[in-house]
Each structure stands twice: as structure tokens, then as C-alpha cells.
Image (tube, rainbow, N blue to C red; front, top):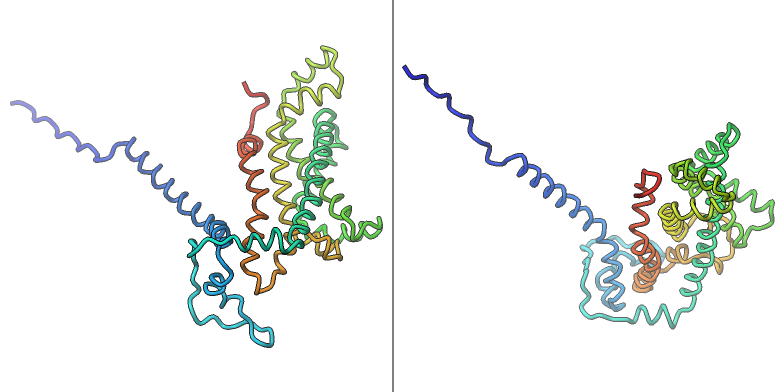
Length: 309
């Protein structure tokens, strides 16, 4: 008698490759949903900056309304969030750029406070990182460990010591009270040291055998290879100090010296439209720097080799 053939197992409707594609599509949709959700406040700020004052008051006036005694009004109606203005208006930008010079003054205060911190922190971090990379020892490892401990502390912890030291140095109410702690921040030293230590020692030793001095090794080998890390530090430091609030409030008692990040929180209820326009202008430098250095930022954070082939 002939043996009956065993029935073959039914094939799955979706193969392994199909399941993989479905998984990728689902993850992409999930990430896109949260990306759009996180971008909504930024989009709302930009689009609402082109609304007229009357339209902004009609849509959001109840949020910022106050009583005669200065108290807040209970919001009984639903607030109308609008992403597209009924009529595009540039009146808010005209007021900010031409009729209210205090906004531009605060903007340039931010530039004056942040740009020197970025430039000189890169300089200090580069020299310190090269020292930690080339000359190792127990004493320097202890110092580097202290750098890490200080970096892990939130700025609020070191704010009081910074205030006391600034008073001892007689630099309170000056830009130096903001510049010095920012220039010598441990973040840049830590990140650049970790990056620079991935450069093969044989490359530096070969350059030294060829007659290169320490300065030539630093400028001709280490710095070009650390370009991605330098861009990453510059972007992260700029964004961090561009949005600082606590430091100017504590270390600068003169409101005329405060950056725009502090001034934005003091715009009153009658200038909500101006707040949207000022916030949009304030976002432009950070967005431009991020878009220009996005590739360098990713390279500096994720780069795990010594030299690219």
C-alpha cells in the first residue's frame, strides 16, 4: 500500500520580510505622530505671530484676561487654537523691529552674553582635552573625575557658589559674572576629551617621529579630526545659554542687561501678539545653527571610531 503523504503546513499570509516592513511602517508612523505633536507649539508660535492683535485677543484673550484687582479670570469657554490666521499681518514684526527698540536691545544682550561663551569654551575645552589625552596620570584622572562630578550637578546647585565667587571678584552685575562660569564649564572638556581619546595614539606618535611638535600635533591632527565634536559642543552650548534664565536673574540686577530669554517672561497680557513675534525672532538663530550643523552634531555624538576611512 502506498503511504499517504503528510499534509504540508500552510504558508503564513505574511512572510518574514513582510512582517519586517509592517513593523518599520508602524514604528515610522508612531515616531511621526510624536514628532508632529512636539512641533505643534513651535508651529503655533510662528503662525500666530502673523495674526493681528484683535484676532489674537479674540482667540486667546480669556487666557490672559485679569480682573480689576489683578487676579486671573476663570476660563469658562474653550480657547480657540488657530494655526492659520484669517488675514496675514506683519504689524507685530513692525512693532518689534521698528517701534519697540527694547526688544532688539534684549536680543543683542543675548548675543553679547552667549557668543563669547561659545567661542572661549571651545578654546578652553580644546586645550584641556588635549592635555587630558596626551598626558595621563593619577592626578589628572582625579581632576577629570571632578570634571564629571561637576558636570552632573544641575546649574542650580552651583548657582550660589558662583554668586559668592562673583561677589568676591567684584564682577556682579557685569557680563563677566555670566561669561566666566560659562567659559570654564566642564561639559565641553568632558565631551571633547572622550572624543579625542578615540584618536589612535600611533597617529600622534608617528607625527612626533616625523618632527612635529605638540602644537603641530594639536592643530594639524587633533583639531581636524575633532571637527564633528567641536560643532556638536558649539551647537549644544549655544542652545543651552541662549535659553538661560536663572543666571541673569541672579547675577545681573540691572534689567537693562538681561537677555531676551528673561524679557520674554515679562511681556504683559496686552502684548501677547508681540510675544509670539519676539519668540519667533528669538528662535531663528538656534534653528539656523542647528540646521547648518545637524550632520556635525550627529557625527560628534555618535562617532565611535578614531579616524574615518
